Length: 401
Image 1 (cartoon, rainbow, N blue to C red):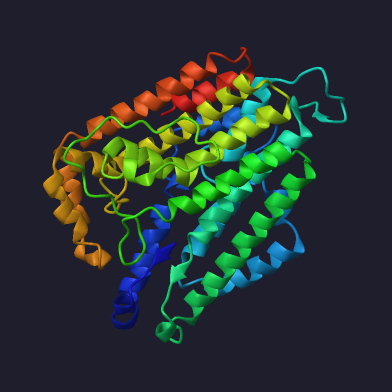
Image 2: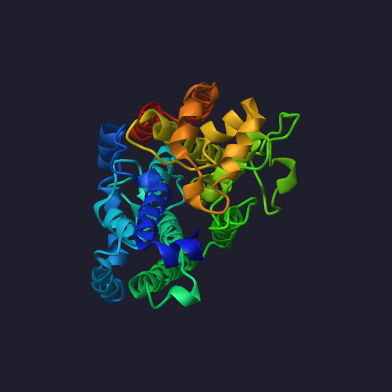
């Protein structure tokens, strides 16, 4: 959740809107229109599954409830509320692969057994109808999380000054809840308790990511103080049902970054890829390949986006828990004093200065190596799948990084 200090709300409305715009961009970075590195790979992949997956959720969007929400969203035009950016991107779509597309490709790459009738199959796409529903569920959960994260914390005393923004918060919550409830209604319709439980743990992970300390007074995440001795702490490939002990990783650059972004996004893709193979009755060992591919691909993309924020000279702002930041903290622990300057007010943190310092250190190279590590692992996992156009499409998406 994005929160804004009472001081900003009362004293400087322009700063409020500027901060809203900044926060919206950072929360939607994984669907930015500027990210076109895999434009061709995405188009080719969508041809394989049969239709543009940017419209994967269209069946749910074209109903009376959401149409009514869309009518109310028009009232927010001119306020720069983050919900506007989320709604625009939801309809238009980006040039990066949707999580739903990855689930469909994994489903097709895994193949189907002989125990399914033609009624169960989408013959043209080569997958099960239940797998297509799961792909929709995956994208809806991801979208609902983006909408919920677009809620602004406006203090009660400031509601009269910013009624439109408070109205936007209401729409963000209701629309996100609507999509989330429909996701699990569709999931229940699959009548597969194991898949239902698996996807439910993704919600736990998404929520847990929002409560990892430390955080600033606007509730944005801050990196933990770097440990004096950086141990090689590996985040397990499978969490199971028990959450990892957070104290074991905070302050350890690679482990902390991996934990935060696994919980915040990679868990959803990993477990839904696993669930897709479970629906096709593949053995547990093969299901694990789907999980590992989703996990590593999502983390590879996250590392790529973190790098883009620093390689693009036009971008001034970036996440303080991005890989280059935490790796520079590992290189220079005294850098933490610069980070803490923004713990009370975002405008006390000089992002230009931070970026300049980080660009002069080894953090970008370390991040590049981290990305290549996840990319290499993803490709190695794909080699265990039988050759198919879906497998090739997944390789192309990974290699586009």
